[in-house]
Image 1 (cartoon, one colour):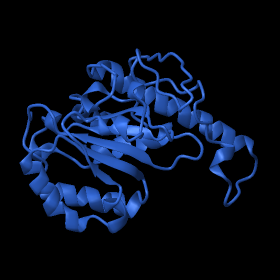
Image 2 (cartoon, one colour):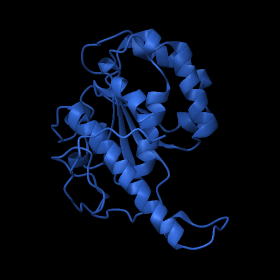
Image 3 (tube, rainbow, N blue to C red):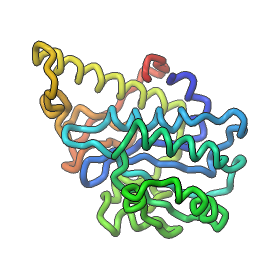
Length: 241
């Protein structure tokens, strides 16, 4: 699946990078970077990135901080209503409570109209988690969701990192596979399978130095600021699903 999603990821339209103050992985959506022809777009890419965010979650964290940033010149046609409805259905049916907070930044009037069309299909609980931000995007920092050092500059933070697919993508996959393998090792070490076993027994601790950021110059950790260096082999892994 990773290889199938790589082409759509090349522009950096979806990025998992950094953590909130509650150790939630931060997922960025940059709709203006979506250059994939409408007929070739698939919902699976966004779901794949959500799964990678799940891989990065430490013990005790079950949801994400999501930022939709609409700044920049659009590189392709907007998402269709049918695709948006399909995404909402998948998230509601298979990923309930995966959203901690969702912030919409710099929405043009046409996007506001689109959101209004989709709003009736959003469940009431999710609606309460959606925030409307300004073009500067400072609400992420000002409202205390994340530290500036964990947020991309485009979204109001201090991270000035131009997206480089050939660096980011293999590093993200390698980090996800590494954390999955370590988690499985800890889980197997607990002995016989047991219904109701707590995830904290095999998930990594928040802020541990074992979580290298998916960009080589920035480290994504928990809220305590522990750091480590990211290294990548440059290979794309295809066994993530």
